[in-house]
Amino acid sequence: MKTFGLIFVLYRPGEEFLRNLSRARALCPDVVAVDNSPRADLRLHACLRDQGIQVIFNGNEGGLAGAYNRGADVLLARQCEVMFLLDQDSGIDASFFTRMMQAAEELGTDTFLIGPKIFEIALQRYMPVIPPGPRWPKPVGVDDRTAGVFPTLCIISSGSAISAAAYRTLGAFREDYFIEYVDIEYSLRANSRHVPVYMNAAVTLRQTNGRIERHGKRFTTHHEAWRRYYIARNAVHCLHLYRSQWGLHWFSAAMTLQQAMSVLLFDSHKVKKLTAMACGCLDGMRGRLGTFERRRPHIAAFCKTTAHPQTRIGDASPVMATEDRS
Image (cartoon, rainbow, N blue to C red; front, top):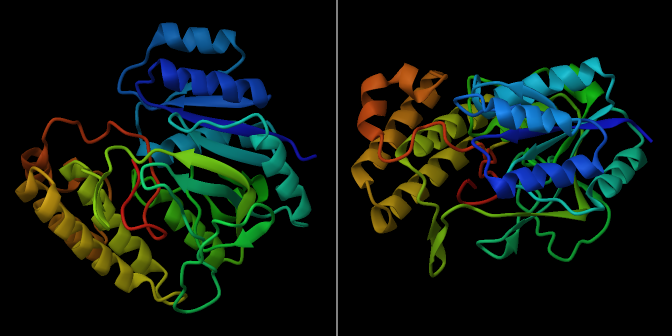
């Protein structure tokens, strides 16, 4: 079996998240914990090192993408053939690595990305796969699939496995995206360069979507304004990048309009959120990337509510769902 390691991203971890790390460490022999917290907790780091976990303090440099890249540097230096990514709020069961590695071994190639089947707890539904072939791809439901791997346009980062050969071929995650669409861009980059991307139906990862609130057929995530900025900007930029392969660039406009409607109907801080979304769309079209604060310091200050714009590590973006998870 190929050698594998795990990049586990921390951000101000509580007891539950540290238990997730401990469980992952018991199942994986090679774990790198990348701490994206704003300040280093030296006592925690020492405790983790005593458990055989290498700790890298990243201080949120480059956001979630930066954390993945720092961890990948370590695992590649250790000659790991497969690198798993896991966010602190993702729990895995005892068979997770075994079933994921079994699927990887059966692919017949050393160059791949593979992710688990995702169950969205708040919405009580599975995320579909999007077959990568057609110019105008359509989501395909996988609720009844419990075995096999399926080609897909995108996978979310948490729970995914990237072969070392694929990472060397594709390069690092985009740190100028910071948090949103990091995984979607990487998946599209892989497909555009003929690196296969798969969903493994034999493994289910249950995800909690933050503060999702349902209103009949509609729902809102109640994302802060800063988060709305990154979602809108990176969606526009990412899907425009790959418009020659897939007709997905229209999706960013449709999604932003749908999210704007949800904000108007259900969210607080409407003006701040809509302002952030509008700025995000403009910056995405102009290719103005990097952090919100550096690009638009005055608007970023206006859009702040109660949370600092670097407080969550969740990263998946909604090519496969209406709203982004947190």
